[in-house]
Length: 445
Image (cartoon, rainbow, N blue to C red):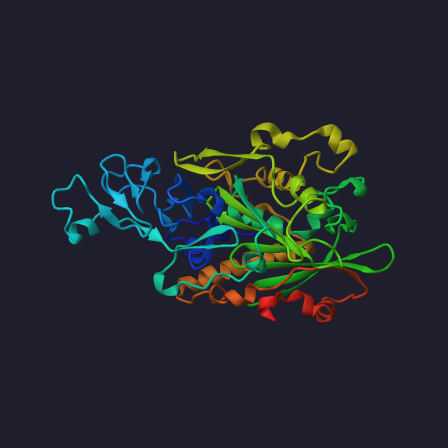
């Protein structure tokens, strides 16, 4: 459990908050690159860490992420014209480039003066394009870190699938669910493993619902091994990585490393999150057969969603992807399915996760997306969850004291692999030693 005070530190992410400032020390996914694929395409409204922003690709192909409102009369730039290497506000014609510079003020007589135009500049953040995503850095310019060197970010075209969608919770609830290995034995359980959409990923073998966790801290966060007992006496190991501040890497196919998957939980505000998913193979491009089965099942991303707008409680608007199974329709729960086919009665791993996470007991009406952690009763299988919380709280506390998070600067240490094995090793250290060459991604070798 967490005290009310510590829970507030963990979950509040706006400018000036300890956790919000910590997140600003890292490169964060902002949107999928294909959403603004073409030069001069329509801009996208996003909100990250409680800031309203606008993403657009200019005529030369450069991507800008700027504040969402014109500096003149604060009109929404979403309605602007994306033209000739800039976004022009339709209200009075002020134009801004990808760096937030005001390059034209057609209604101002002395607008040729650089000093006058500088007064119209708006906030802009550095961007990078990698791994099929647009990344943004929102921290101090002099502390800009390298991009994390995840293996999936450097794979050839077609080897990785990325997507994003709206989750109506604080970032921490989805992040914690992602590193909670015990829940796959229940929430994602199919009664007939041969028909399971998770068959072949290893999750269908997780019959032992009380895995033993062993955790090791790393430069990027931590890794842990979850050991389950198999009927034949061997051990079923799943090794998972948690990367600060909220990335995961989850193994897929036992005894054969061909790829993995994971998620990033980017705070929109205290009560809403953009979930980014990455699912990849290193041996060949993603294609039909098992790959398509996993993707369509919702194990890698929820396909039953649609692009659209979401109006936030304070009246802000974002462009996002809206899951069709949601709170308003009870996540399409089917009680017959629950009795006969699977443990939850809900189709799709992500729908199952969101149903439980978006329905957790909140701290109250003011923040319905934040769970009241003071009422939890944590157990040994929650080791990874507790460790992630403690590490984030420690880094946020250190940052307040002027100690920068070292892991933000260690991009190369992110080049690791997550593996799953059925083997005889009983101890996690022995497991890591035996398979150490498989755990390092190529760029880290």
